[in-house]
Amino acid sequence: MNEVQKKVEQCVAQIREKTDFIPKTALILGSGLGVLADEIHAVTAVSYDEIQGFPVSTVTGHKGRFVFGYIGEVPVVIMQGRIHYYEGYKMSDVVLPIRVMRLLGAEILFLTNAAGGISAKLVPGDFMLLTDQISTFVPSPLVGANVEEWGTRFPSMDTVYDEDLRQLIHNTAKDRGIDIKEGVYVQTTGPAYETPAEVKMFAQLGAHAVGMSTAVEAVAARHMGMKVCGISCITNMAGGTSAKPLSHDEVRDVADRVAPHFKTLVRDSIKKM
Image (cartoon, rainbow, N blue to C red; front, top):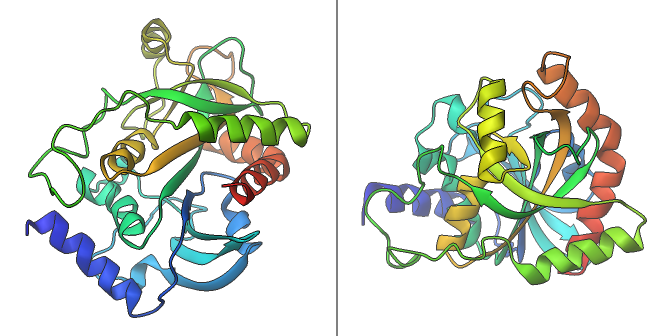
């Protein structure tokens, strides 16, 4: 057993000492969505700092805990605060929560994030359903010894974001009268926002939105056989596409403004999963 596998299984064992809850869907809450975890039928919560060896979120507004409970009748585990590569963690630690939630029983990973819009068809406040991703600009979470029990050495990424789940989310948005776009997401390391030249490059590569999370989480999940879906909340226009300089305050303000619709879309979609 290598060190990464040992660390993951130790984290799972510690959580199992606190709860025997078995989730079906794992949900990672991005900026502005954290309150959703406070509104579900919760069974229990486990703070990251209660789990020895577990990375702790250092970003303002991220509570840093797992919440176990139900959305409708669907058993879920919610990450109220994610781990980012720019916080200084190794990539194996960034995706450790994904592996832990999979071993706890989750079969579906629902990713949400705040992202910068690259496409001219997107404006702040839009929701973008992820159809594909570019993870070339961050280290792969699969580098290193492969754990055969988790997945194959060379996993296919032909369809990272499950087509059936994407259709389910589209249908939910239509039923709730919520407009939703779709597109390709590119992850950078952060924490600096992208330059105008980088944004032009990303557009040339086919990206519609950019952020500092999500893609590596999706890769780790697909490696372990999970079905993945994701939604970006476009909280700002990417560097060089707006006359106003980017700021984290702008990201939070837009995320908070559209949070009610975002929560409805995520919550009602999960009820159908």
